[in-house]
Image (cartoon, rainbow, N blue to C red):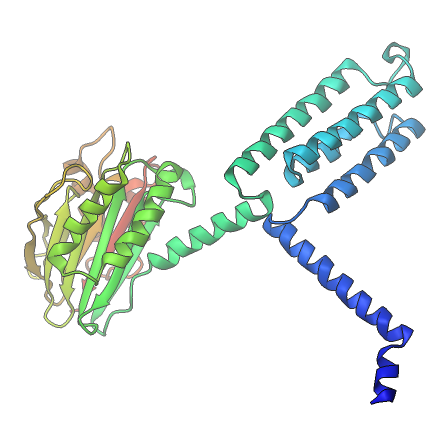
Length: 382
């Protein structure tokens, strides 16, 4: 025991313990800084050190290292530092400009001097960086995590919009195109298989607005609707969704939605609609498309709304299409013309099958439309 204690108290062992504690402290500091929870002194110290280096290089050769090079630590500080630390960095940059101006002489004497234009450029970059830092502080999300959070949200929406697998004899696919090629959309889908997997419930919703303007509301509603789906009887889903929207008290808080309840064994279905464009069903027997639409008002307009379903059946070879108004309605054409164009394009897939057709239909019908577009296809194999 005495020998072990003596070994533990050796200088080498004490140094190893101190190094280990220092590594843990530095690692925690780095993690906290990456998350935006820790101090920014490391970045501030690094940027502070670059200011005299840049100043010295400018004094050595102002042609290759111009005085305007000081904008580099200022721009980096706008992305990394908090407003208070940023002001300290600005003070150091201003002092460096003053030193350069005194050592290089008046700007009238030749190139490579501190001109009024250089001062204006450095000041403008500093103002822009300060605005960024203040906005970041107000939001509470540092730039290092902001992009990661948006990417994570986009992936969660994409995963949540995936349709569950269907039994043999059924095919399903969905395509969603946000407005302007953005990553976020005001259209979303939630789906689940209920009653032991026998029933497929799908909800396609179009939130008011488009693209990034509707993305936050779309994200909130998709989570809420996903929690309601399968937890309530089918006839109670849209009333509950309507009540939820009304409680949000948004200025632009309405949405259209369609709720499909499909029996995967018999092919019978109920379609509930809340101000949504009609669904389209292709009958394999006649080869004609028929509009299917339930009765109900927009979500989020008034309480106590009733949503009456329409019933139908998908026989072998039949196809059901659900879509949002961005696919069939624009300022240049009304919804009936858009539906006619959509069914005309869809007829091209009747013979060969609709596998992979959803994306191509959006490309053919509404490729350049500046609105969110979503299309859902459900096919029962012949």
